Length: 115
Image 1: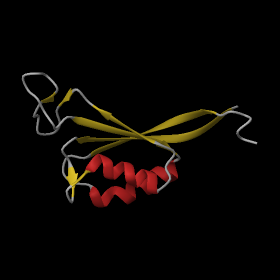
Image 2: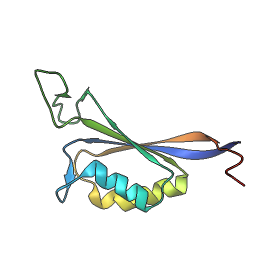
Image 3: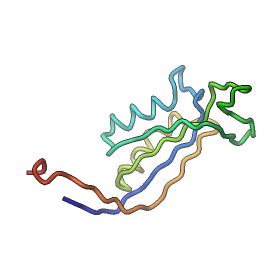
Image 4: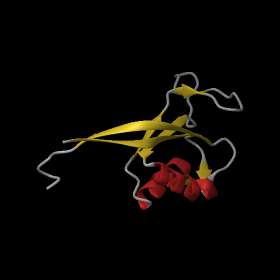
């Protein structure tokens, strides 16, 4: 069965080495998404990039880095996204970038399971 709804796509751009109270920031954000029962979250690890300080982070063999770019994506309703942002503001430090986009969500479910 196919359902369609409006929603928001939230992207969070950070570095792999970003921490909050000694914990990996991306893992903390994932835990918060789970705690708030968001529809889902995906974490992508980049192979190369730079941010506001223009320091290149790469997997290139001659420049090994443990500070690669991380992008987290969450898709949910506008209300849940706003609640989530409010919830993670306490973890925000220098360098965190958040973008939002209006999206159409198309979800496919097994009709047998929805009964």
